[in-house]
Image 1 (cartoon, helix red, strand yellow):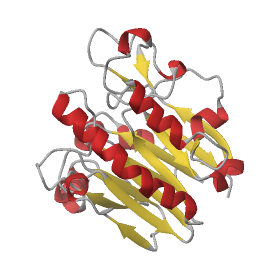
Image 2 (tube, rainbow, N blue to C red; image 1 turned 60 degrees about the horizontal axis):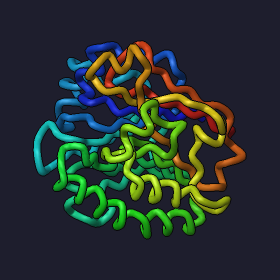
Image 3 (cartoon, helix red, strand yellow; image 1 turned 135 degrees about the vertical axis):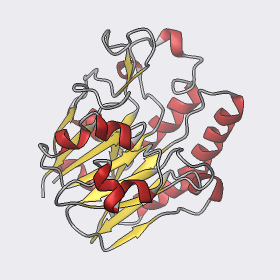
Length: 262
């Protein structure tokens, strides 16, 4: 089973850059998208076909932002019809920004999640900290549920020095703040915690999934690893391989694929 996570920073823009042409070569079972930056009617049906956002052989589910059109938004594409789809966790300020979508296939739950960025200022950083505090008990409940979870998405946080090129100069910047890293690493702190699929497969890896659009950061590979697939420990032994695809460029993020044994 192959699952791909991708922050599109505008799914129609990524499609125009050839994302779905590339996706058609990946033999993926599930695609989780963040930052669709569109409404569902623009991405599905005839409009979706015109915009290049309806790949053959897949069905799609969307959770748009209701607070502001063209903002945030998540999607899940799947070859197989889910048993159920969930579009809200239960906190309106988070849910209405279009940041969570979950598809359930038997005991497997696949989530497309977009954790807020705090880079625009203190107000949004404060909201990010609120989201982190609110999410923690929910994530603990999912761990204890007995279900197999794969949490795909842009978490807007690096875990360690290996996950960011300019470690020292970013210590006071959102995404690399000590409390953020402590929170994310706390989720993965024990054998009973969440499993960072990339880090489990590449303990010493130094690959990135996001690059600033400033200063030729991508060409110089001055990046951050902020896109993850976090799994329940039950899936650790099923991890087989993963790949980050920085080129061709469809977004300021790279698609991140993980292969799981059936």
